Length: 248
Image (cartoon, rainbow, N blue to C red; front, side, top):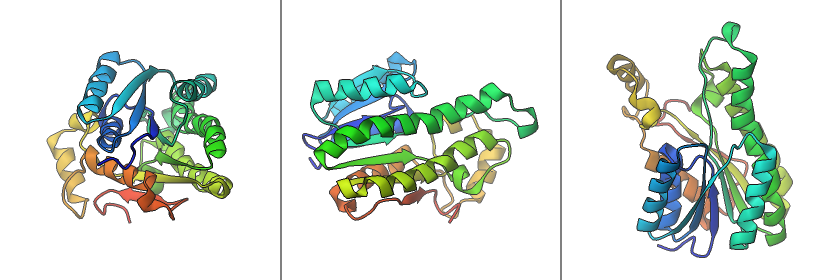
């Protein structure tokens, strides 16, 4: 398959979990994939190896998505190195759980700055070259808790709900330049983050999912690649749920 041959894709938080699966899925379609990572260089290098094994070209860039200047610089460097940017996937995110009455300002700020402000800064930077190209696709990774809410995750839920509003607003702004903006909303996905959940909690989670299982990172990646592809050419401003029916 080569649906993304000669296309350049930037995936934030691409060194592990869902981000890694997204990067590899694009590589299988022939893309050049630039991944960002916050600090785990070994994991980033492992992802690069998987990208190359899948038939794509890869590059890893370390920066903090909460740093607006770093976001702008990264997009500039992608353009200088590769000459184009066709797809932006805002996947990087952090979660600091805690009841709202006990949440510290710094924990709230960290989640909003990384999950929401970071996506905004990258969209702002990427929209300029995409407008000149008169085409592009932006996919934001929100979450089921951004739609339904979740006790103990007020900041994380707020940041992910904010991504939905950002997605819909920017979709309206950029549509005239043939830039589509969509979101993917995963439910409970089998990643390192969910691996530490105890058996009792996992059993309750699965019982709440109509399809009676956790999702796989590859299933989220397939949704992202679809929304970035020509097969979704008439889809923008949409939130695609990948949650096994847990929230409809």
